[in-house]
Image (cartoon, rainbow, N blue to C red; front, side):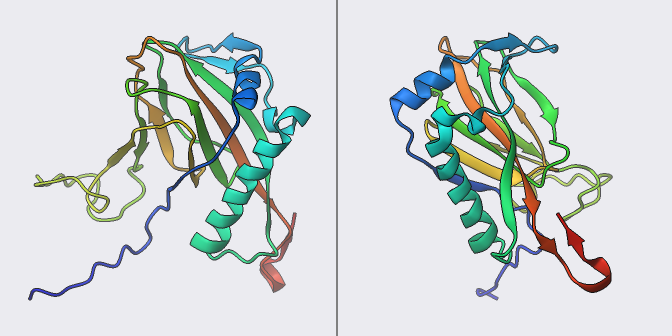
Amino acid sequence: MDNYDILPLWATPIYVSSLTCNNETKTLLKELLYNRIVENNGWMSEEMRVLNLPAFSRLKNIILDHVIRYSNQCLEIHNTIEFYLTTSWVMKHKMGDWSQAHMHVNSIFSGIYYFEVDDNSGLLGFERHSSMLNLFTPTIELDVNKWNVYNSRVWQIKPENDMLVLFPSHVRHYVTPSLSENLRYCLAFNIFVRGNISKEISELNL
């Protein structure tokens, strides 16, 4: 009775790592032009393909290296499949700014690189959609002693400087309000795939 294994079947893989980015690059990211978004809860860069700009080519390559590690080493996706960046933009939040729960369309993976945050900048949260059943149906809510990755409907991560997070684009995520007097900056991006996918009657060339 003392020995047992838990198999996390059909888990949602959230990749968390760190990367090195120099201060000059971070300054250039902060100096982009920004517009207040329609929801009035943050600023978004006017440029929607930030990582395609020559000034950020090194950062782009570092991020793509992490995407390859995530796809090939963690998910064991065949290395003939190529993943590439589609859109990339910077979000800027002041005290009280936040982001509502959402997912990213027309992409396979999405990511966030936090390049300027502090302890009070808010949390990144992930929600399990009611259609994603892993333990109980949405009509069952049992009391638990402690929330963990098996029983939680919501999971939160505290961002740190130079933290990189990758996740499937269909996963709903949000940002809690910033309680900091300092601005919070993060670079968000989407990833899609190209190559010869599957074979025979299911073959798809992208």
